[in-house]
Length: 124
Ligand SMILES: Nc1nc2c(c(=O)[nH]1)N=C([C@H](O)[C@@H](O)CO)CN2
Image (spheres, rainbow, N blue to C red):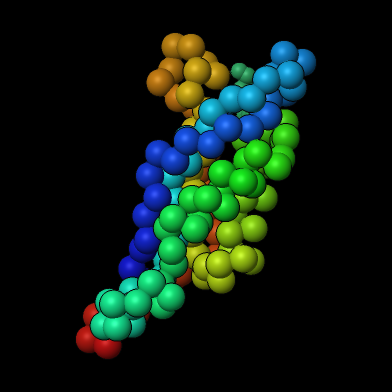
């Protein structure tokens, strides 16, 4: 299956378990792979027939602003759920990185895959 990609999307949100983290916003970096068949959009050169990565990026930014979870896990799970519902995504892989959370690490975070990946026949 083809994928629409969004890499290193920076979003600002209240996130973290410690008291000081509840009083600030922090930046998360999101990587998204969204399964979709791009062939119809390519054949018709039509944005309406694919997943609009700009619209999805905007929605992720708004989601981050509107929520204040404790755990990166909760952020990822709920974001994936929202994207699958609102954009009819059958399968996605989402990586959420929290840079600076562990000073000796470049970033820490989690990666999830949700939905069912239907492999299309290469001869289709
Ligand atoms: N698996 C996780 N571990 C930790 C998280 C988290 O969200 N998931 N969060 C924290 C703190 O909020 C940390 O980021 C503060 O630096 C610790 N571990």
